[in-house]
Length: 219
Image (cartoon, rainbow, N blue to C red):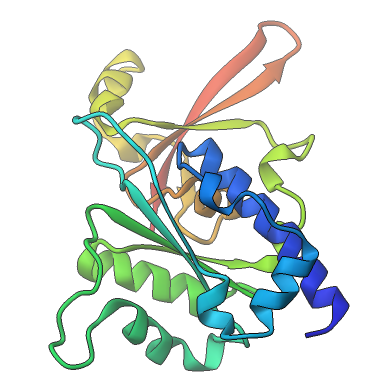
């Protein structure tokens, strides 16, 4: 693998680990590495050596996953996406699911532009079995988008607080809120939003100091 690709994998791995840490996952088992380690892992079985699995502790009321599997799809996966997902999600012999959709979310890192093929695949998995899967172009994760100066603070509103939030703003349903597109919006992917999720966005305000707005994730 060439130096540029190794550099992209190294920097994007730092970013995805920071994103997972911000989500509350324990990333300690994967923190110590450098470009040399990435090159060594990438030179072997690329779709296994680079993979990670992290966990987090949540309250009993939370409906969010407690496990995140990070899968690397090298080389490019777009033209073999159906087979890749089947191998990742379904046992070939029994046809049974390989993951618990309620407890597990999946992040797939590739080296290609994330377009409609990936958006549709992610939405289909959610619609069929409520499987949370997000695709990322490693090149787009060299710098954490959430840390960009023009990106305001985004926080997921826990599901158990949705009804209270709607009541506060005198709304009868989530669809009254502005939308953020599932998977198509890179921030939605970074936060792990799924249809029905609500995100709180805090922006600076010349008059009030800060103001908050809310968006609902839609297909």
